[in-house]
Length: 319
Length: 319
Image (tube, each protein chain N blue to C red):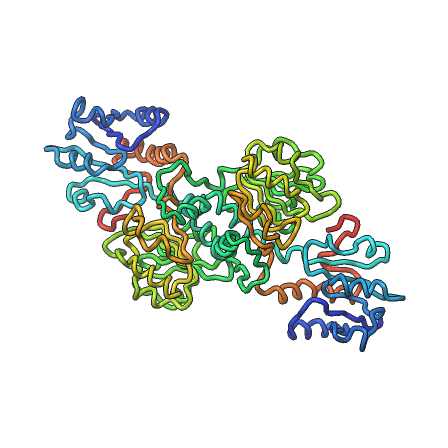
């Protein structure tokens, strides 16, 4: 088998560079592209940047065969082109699960334990022990998580350690670890509409675009909290804004938005009972190391037999 | 055995009143005291109020033999008098463990996942994805919990479900469930001083008064967060205020204080990087029901053989 050219698009450290090189691939740095190595000669992309990717795809007789995306969501990549040309795609699903699930628990506990009210009273130097805002506990509530992959499972696992009852929503209603119950997204029923806390971790696909909208939110009986750490466009922004303002949605914790960065004049900034994080719940400290640790076993196996150990994306499903 | 008179000091509901009465005790309401029943005739107090308790203790030939306190901490009760007169004391240790441990995790996740910064930026309509404030994850840190009883164990259990390493501090260093390691309070060492997060859930006793003071805090190498959900006077207020202001203590989550309610001019209100809750982390929604469920088995056993199933306080230790 000829030596494969691996283009390093996403930054890595020397330790990881050495690990990659030890597999026998030829590492190509971005600076070397078009100079020492022709775009058509690249076999593997570690990381995706649209301008570079398009250049490789446009090269006559391109040998691009595998792209590794360093994100879980791959909705911004040209999946149809990949499918048509037989280019394989792996993603980083799972790598953010720990960080995101901890942020989701942070947001849930923030509202359930009434830290929002405590924080508000603190600013007014108001000691409010004897009001009617007794903190809830996690197990007072029912949790419905849309998306039962790595991230959804970690959220469910943590909720269960607090005694929470968890329902997962996925494509077919197939069982998933750590969920007490699962339901198909095609046949949502009262088990969902009775949820107190709804968490979205679904990927963005044609099916999920604006899945959360006025019509959907209207069906919930008493939605204490809506958390979105999936993708912004899975939610129609106006439905959350209207829902919070009308009280239909009592609280919201939002990490992703249809427009990011959130513009300074966005109505989200001033929405009451809402916690905004800047699409950073998945950011992790040792990202390069974790990313390389996910990629390396795939690289070794791919060089051996052309298959992947983990994280290959189904190009028709989009995740 | 003659019928015991049980004085209902803490409010209960009719359902609980019926359960208590079914054991064969004679229930005495506060309104009946001094009218239908003499203070000297009361055998058992359900709940403690100082004025009423003192009246019973002062009654000639008082028959008071058992007091059930509806709190975990009993530092405000006349323990020496109880010991001297052979009056038994039970408390409600454990009843608040679920609520308090969830609040402790809420506070830890709030600072670890940088919701404090997100919340601050939200008020300024500032989207700060690319700053140097990457959220931590729970397992980046070492946790030392002072107090390894019901509450400490629940905190440790939850931290472990997030992957946290937990050290417990107690009187002798005896092992305690859910702790990776335990240390005697008499022989603290570098395992403690290397803590990132310190949680106090110790009761207030002569030994623990102002246990957390300037001298103690000075020994920590990098204290990311100090949480106090135990008792206010276990901590010398000025040591936390000075610690936060100097940066020795990076963040604090405080539910209890030396003076409560916190006066409007208290420096705690304006302390940076500090989250204040109004001594409500232990407040629970179905308190009367939970309290009675704890008391009832003790009442049944006590009427049978004069002993308790659970929660008898050691009057010399104070917990």
